Amino acid sequence: MLFTWGRSSINVHQSVRGLREGVSPIFNTAGTSPAGEAYATGTMPGEGTFFCLVCGTQVSLHETDELPACERCGASRFRRDSIFSSLQDHGSPTAEFAVSAEHEQPAWLDEARQQLSGHGYHLAMREQGKIETFALEHGWTRIGRCTTADICLDDPSVSRRHAIVNNKEGRGPRVLDDRSFNGILVNGRNVDVAELEPGDELTIGRHSLYLLQA
Image 1 (cartoon, rainbow, N blue to C red):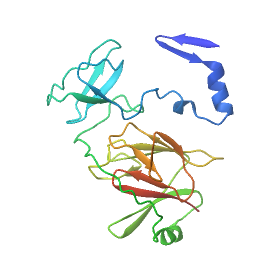
Image 2: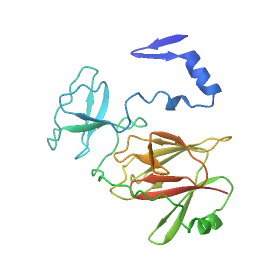
Image 3: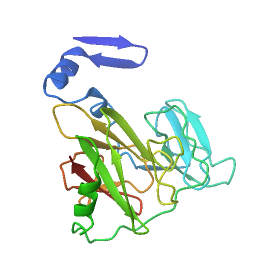
């Protein structure tokens, strides 16, 4: 059954089938283009809000509008803005970052497991010799450089809204790239969406977070 509302169409049978299979509809409707795809001035990327990769300035387009040059800095490369907010507060631009090819589990994880309080899933990281753990509550956990993020990573290699982890009862957490600049990696593999298992390494910018279960 197909319902049409404005320019959008919703296939009810597909949505119900996705729920029965345990797949949240949000992961199936985020769009078909890569989350980190860049668009150049003069192209028609479709309707939506886009931000300049140099200064973060945003521009809203209709379906047939061409991308203009950035009115603030004159740059010509844009990305589509966050699918979880109408406008991202990009502030300062995100720095490009090369990820290390080494992905062995560090020895400090045993100490991190001993620090866990409460049952469930946690993310653990070590920064300047200090281990930090973050309990994943049921629902959405937002990770980014923005101070309002649930897990705030204050580093230029991290986008203000970088990734979202969905922790749903009855299955392991799932991570989604929130249209970040540098993308996300799970065990060294670049992904848009991925299921996480205990011991997995989640790379956000220059930070490595490990999923632990108590």
